[in-house]
Length: 364
Image 1 (cartoon, helix red, strand yellow):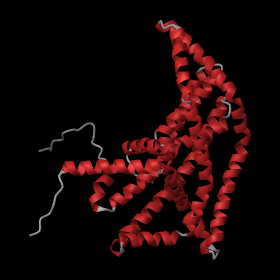
Image 2: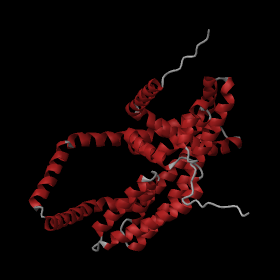
Image 3: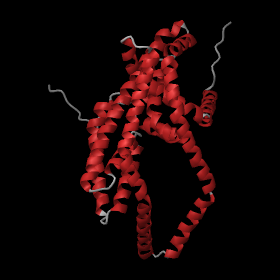
Image 4: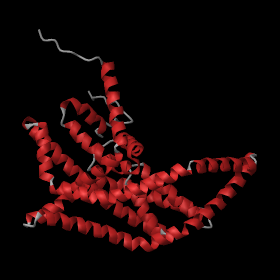
């Protein structure tokens, strides 16, 4: 007699929670290993069409990969070389910017003291205590900073090697995944591969185009307003804008702070706010829907959660790649029957009920 065992809901919930906790713990602990691999896979998928273009023209695969990687590396180095002058000026001006910031901060303390009957001594004591607390942990902060810089340098060396190897062993890795899931699931695995590759390529290309447009608009707008270091700040804002929803707010805060610190009139902060709001209006209603919005069908709530979770697990690196990872997970969930409800949860196919309903009566 065959009896089917059904696990109670509470037991399933506990197992899911334990599984998610274990997964996130592994991702956090192994971030130094996993982050370069994930970035390398995404970059390899992005560069694969260029490699395939050369290979189809009877070029040796190793030579084709080397040409593509060298060209991309030289392009990135060239962009940094062009910006190096303004970057150096911005770095040299940082002490002056900090001095102005503290001058404005002291003025703000006096204003708070006058209007809220709080003695400046108490406010300065609170700031001094905060500084002391920060200094007490400065040793670990310096160690963490040195470690982060070291990790970044390692990634700059390791990622090109990973990308080269992934592109070279592409067919071998694909055959391994087909064998791993068996011949019976070959069709579904192929569909997941095709859809994931298309999502990554289309989304990232569209995102790079969007970032370029936003960088130009930011730089022109800041230059017209007379904000110093307009090009560097424009590119920085465009890069932060890649982080969904949160990056734009961070960029706007940086722009307003620079305007307050470097300009005599604080009204420039309002001008910057209006400028950035206008650019974001163009981005959210024209550029994003046309270029990026049609590539990744993830609802806003899941996107924000993904960015926060990605930042908590992998830092800034996790925030940048959170959306492509969620998009790939959605494709996988949509192709597995038992996981399709989760794919539906990630998607943006939400019915939009009308705000006003009018009852119509049929004429006799």
